[in-house]
Image (tube, rainbow, N blue to C red):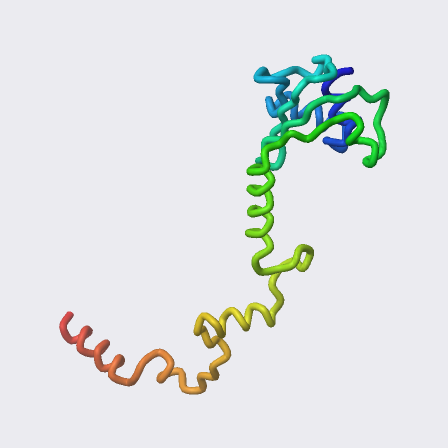
Amino acid sequence: MRIDKFLWSIRFYKTRTIATEEIKKNRVAIGESVVKSSKEVKEGDVIKIRKNQIDYKIKVIQIPKSRMGAKLVPLHIKDVTDKEQYEILKLRKMTQDYYRIKGEGRPTKKDRRDMDEYAGNDIDADFTDWDDFFGEKEDSNDDEKIEKDL
């Protein structure tokens, strides 16, 4: 069976087209050599796949006849990926979920106000006297002094 069809049939990639594109990008290898989409897969081959910045290794136990259900995949392959790779993936997911739960989207107005309050930025202050806001009357005297110097 072709390697692109094999990776699709064991549900490693959602479509055969995606599998072919990943193979063209040199992210799939059998043994130590990078392969083309037409490479035939045999029982006992160890396939190395780079996906989501993780290096997966799978050993072919049996060649499937066609695409199968997810429950039947362990009958055809054995996952021999290093545990370190899964730890890297776990850490990467934890760093992404540090503030927001997945799917919550952008910060709300309340979140923004809470962040401003935490940072010490008080943007809701009422300034009725603009002279006090921009500086005291002494600043206008400084401007007069500068004009006299010129």
